[in-house]
Amino acid sequence: MNGVELNLNINALLPAAALVVTAIIIMGLDVFNRGGRSTTKGIVPWVALGGLLVTAGLCVSLIGRPVSTFQNMAIADNTAWALDLVVLVGAALSILAGVHYIPQVNRQVGEYYALLLLVAAAMMAMGAALDLMVVFLALETFSLGLYILAGLSRDNLRSNEAAMKYFLLGAFASAFFVYGAALIYGATGSTQFNAIGNALANGQADLTLLYAGIALTIAGFGFKVSLVPFHMWTPDVYQGAPTPITAFMSIGTKAAAFAAFYRLFLVALPSQQLVWGWALAVLAVLTMTLGNLAALRQSSLKRLLAYSSIAHAGYILVGLATGTPAGVDAALFYLIGYAFMNVGAFAIVILLEKQGEMDALGTRVQGLATQHPKLAFVMSIFLFSLAGVPPMAGFFGKFYVFSAAVAGGWSWLAAIAMLNSAIGAYYYLRIVVNMYFADPTAETLTEPRITLPLTVSMSVALVFTVALGVLPSLWTNLVQTGLVETLVLR
Image 1 (cartoon, rainbow, N blue to C red):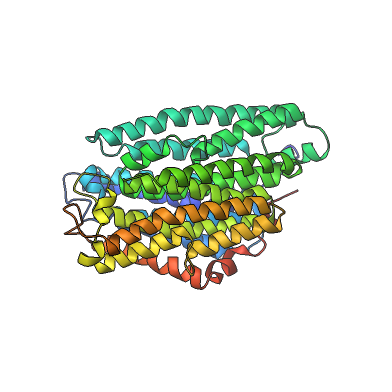
Image 2 (cartoon, rainbow, N blue to C red; image 1 turned 135 degrees about the vertical axis):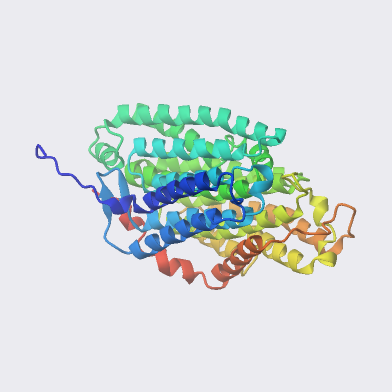
């Protein structure tokens, strides 16, 4: 076509397309379920899970194949598949945890599953993006879906407040990102990552515009991953949103935004690593420190996990700041481990909540081991992993990230991260102490509403939280080898 070579390899977008098709099927099924049997007892949740499993199978089958692109705007490589699996794990476990929970907050459950799958598809597209415009489209698509999901409980004022805060602050973050992308385009003449990198390598970029664009882009991404000082929305939104949605949000947004972080900085801006590396290192320190210190004072378990999520974003950012292949590999391992242990912790919070409450105070776990020893044991495993206690997945995630920082010449950053990890261990272990050594109170959980799907969600999360710690090669052998080498197409 006029001498222009088209490269429309569908592999780059195949997993996301599979989820979109599943979402369309669910919307069709939901129409036929109207006025009939309840979708809670129907097949809609299981169709959603089936679509996720098929998509996961596609991702695994494509790992290790030659790299391909969709008009240099999206890429099919091992990094994309790995990040897709993180999103799929978070979505699947959250769906299982919410099978009997979501109908209590909104009767239109078909729309919930369709929205969640569309949000996951946009997150996966963002992980494969090689163009700032594709990143923006994916970012806005999953953000709009999350705004709606956060306010799914329409009769709950806290849920409405969460959705409104998320929407208003998200609009500002989107404006920052678009302005930053415009400045990067003005500095380099392109929105494609490879072309931006080539312009910098050839000395054809306006560095003043470029640095301003990088700063604004970091601000836009920082909002999505709850980096300080762009974290203000996180505690209120996590607390007000229905808990299964909070669990998915805490995983998926990190995976998608950090994927775009990696692509932009390692493909388009590797020559500027000294600039953005220090910027990300400072943000990592601020994020870890504020997240852990704020979590120390929380009485709400969801707010505690929200600030914990902020701190973990800081740990993951340590891997990116190094700008090395080892740092990327370490961050990918951290993300998959965090997906299992964090969704597992939120699944326990679902059991601790009262009907329609959408939150649980820390007093609800006091003396829990006396009345429900199995539940207390499972919660302890998730908390130990979040704290980084061996041999859980959280320990090896932190070990890999901190080791990559030291190997990359950022020993001071690794030291601060280890100190913050020690601070974080305090509030996690405080919950364990309360479960096993405190006396039960009137608030202590007495009759947990344990359902089969929720049990499956917790069990899968528990098994992989331990398995990835005992045998980290389960993940590293699958996707780690050569990840960064496939990031750059020149």
